[in-house]
Length: 97
Image 1: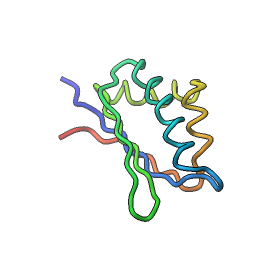
Image 2: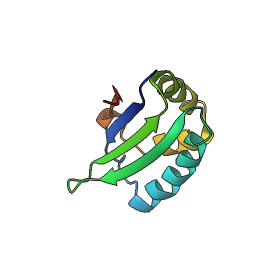
Image 3: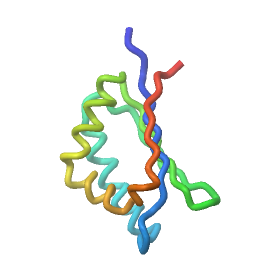
């Protein structure tokens, strides 16, 4: 049996982007992700230093990797990605233990 995959993305907002901008775009991106095969859940959090973390759980690593590719083709995800400082992105995938 394949293990669940946990996707963790740590990032900062691009210059001039407000938290309101992020929340609106994040909601639309989350709705898009929920349509991808193997989606389980998504949580977005903010640290005291202004860094954000986006945690998405997938049925397995194959679904997580396919979703990463499909997200690049999604208009809703693209709008969300545009709000992120690309230099700040730290993305990792983990197998659930």
